[in-house]
Picture 1 (cartoon, rainbow, N blue to C red):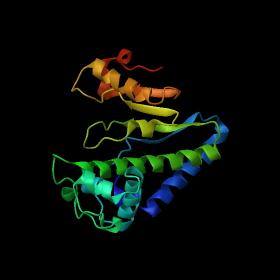
Picture 2: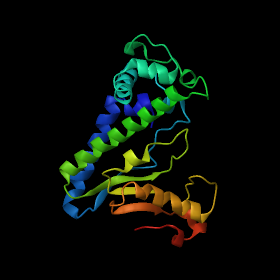
Picture 3: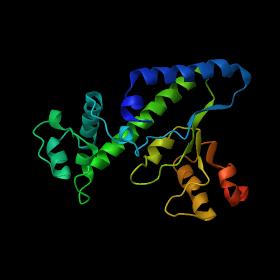
Length: 219
């Protein structure tokens, strides 16, 4: 998903909610155990729409987010970012390149990526809460996410909280490039953020057959 086309697009959000509501209404009377909010859902930082937006609604919400991070102090933000914004209304960048002006201090870029992850998670929680209203007792969560890097990663602790389904690919890597041990670690690392989730770990498909089912730990 991207920022303008999805996360901050009211029409897209309404249609997504309606699809979730229809799924709950149509399946709750048939013993459905749970719902996934999507397979391979992530903010695509490798496309411009997934890493930057010029839309004012995005920046307005980003400023409010920053106020919670810097306790409402523009002086603290300027000190951390090494900037000189005269007012909160001026906190805005013209491109993602401006966000990351220096690798010595990537604070603006990092804060914007964390903000994006925060909004992404908030949208998921809104759908989760609606499904729980329509189908009490059903498990709700996600599957197939595998964003671990500093470029496209998300806040896994925040993303997994209060979700009953947290499933990553067995073939995803975290901290290494290959090996069944490394791949098994990923599912356990994600599971550690919400150990009470009944469906948490990794699933396997034809892509991961070479690692064998014994390497995909559930618990």
